[in-house]
Length: 484
Ligand code: NAD
Ligand code: 6OD
Image 1 (cartoon, rainbow, N blue to C red):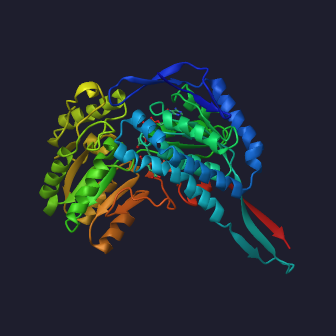
Image 2: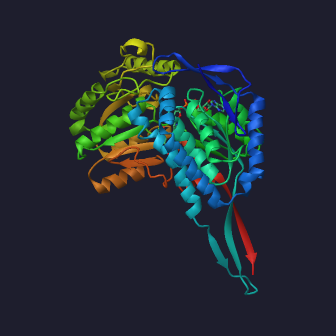
Image 3: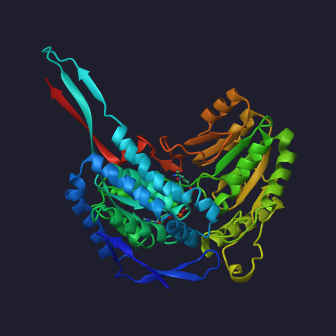
């Protein structure tokens, strides 16, 4: 049985109780993970503090940048190891992880190395009464030891999305991966050692949230800032923990994203993009679409094409090249998604396709599989239209005007992302600007330029990360005023 340990001060350790990691494909135990004790979390924080005061705090930006490039290159060199670990933990298709998760794991280090190398600081010259003047410049310092709390849906991608900029800015980190996906964060510890990142810069502690490693990290008084991706309710708990000591938080949280499809869209592109945004990663993408609004003249044709696309998705294991969709992450999450499938039936939905558990062969029989599912016919007040499900499902509704669809699409507590499908350029801008979200895609979905701001409005998040925006969170910006 594989043993997965904590990575503290450059060493793999594990004094705590082990817990089981199960495969989403079969529900069989595939590894034992060492749950970090409170003392181990404290040791990780102390190691991170020592590294900050020691070698990591002293190296030049150029040396730091070289190390981050080396990390990225080593991830790429060990691509197959990362791919195998990510697919084992999540059950996601290799075709998906090899295109998105692992390459982004590497590029998240390069982009932020480039940012810190190339972004200049601000400078203001001012007049003074004595006529001699003064100058002001902005000077950035690391914020300190950053607690990084991660989810399970895109484990390496979302963890490095935070660790990359944190390290690029000169901080050290204590990472708490999701209990469901411990492997790639641990593997990254090996990479850090191989390329010579000083001990204590990157630490990993495994475990759960409340009364476990997650809470031990977020409540630790020597954690200077907390960056989190996960459910909104968890983000609220973390914000409360961070209030003690008035520590800054960056929160990337839940979504209930709407796709808006106008009758003038490129129909095939809209279908392809919407199928991807609903079913990619088995619907477990925070940016994914769970509400689809389609202009009435093309509604029936759109629903029929979505049904055909969903029914054409082949469910299967990661290594099968024909697999279009894997399982959900866990039995617990499968039960949650299936409970929403029941809620939709209770609320009177018309089930266009799916709604249950597929029969899977052999060792996949007991895995966390659900059918790709589409509903129509529900009122906007229905729970499956209001609440985040985080599964491969959507409700499709017709709309009659721009005002109509904007009112419906914006009537939600979340505000993460939207995808707008139209060939009318003016309308595209108008609707994108009026959607209350952090990210609006037009004629695409999940097209990412890592220099752009990423984050959510309303209950989907606090703050923006990406490009220079990450500097706002991961550094302390000081103004130096010099009287001449
Ligand atoms: P989750 O909130 O259950 O867990 C996330 C992490 O928080 C895990 O590591 C967990 O152990 C830890 N945790 C839980 N309770 C804690 C506590 N009290 N204190 C400290 N840590 C705690 O989320 P999840 O189920 O892993 O991920 C799915 C959710 O993440 C969905 O809601 C999805 O929308 C959201 N998400 C958002 C984004 C984004 O960028 N906005 C990206 C991916 C996922
Ligand atoms: O692309 C990214 O940088 C990012 N943070 C994606 C988040 C996806 C949510 O599941």
